[in-house]
Length: 163
Image (cartoon, rainbow, N blue to C red; front, side, top):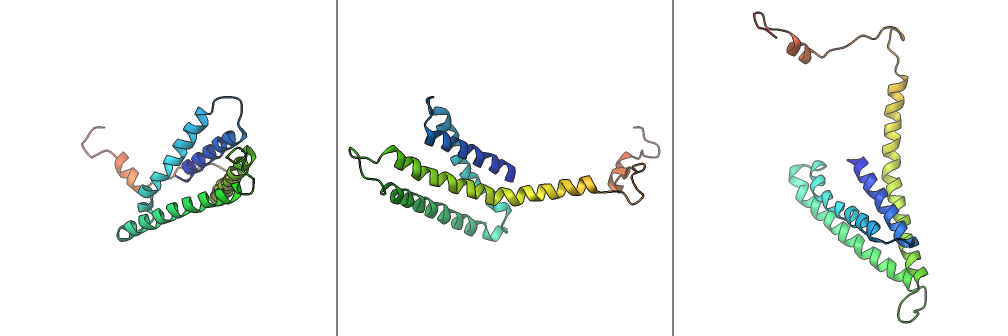
């Protein structure tokens, strides 16, 4: 699940960067990517039940709701503070003001992705390294197949039965 969220976050970051940099092609595709990535946050309400006991799921969802709405307020307020650093031109802020404000948001997304992805990738690296360096006690000779007892019972034929 972590890999899926990392992919969605990376997709969101790329789409936001495309929208900030304003390339000459239509912006429909990046906006579609942003809408898909943003709607993925609704999955957190369903997933949170896997991380808390049944008695605390409603409280955890309530806490998540408060955090998401609170964070949305903080981001909007911060965006306004950044925009106010430029004077109004013809009744609105210049393009560079919006690019700067949204660039700060994208940098926060990159930091959040790194915060979650770096430990996860380090865990994968540790698992891969352990698999690559594991040596059997008898050396690197013949490999012996180990079949769990539960599977042996399934593979054995009954006394008078046919396969």
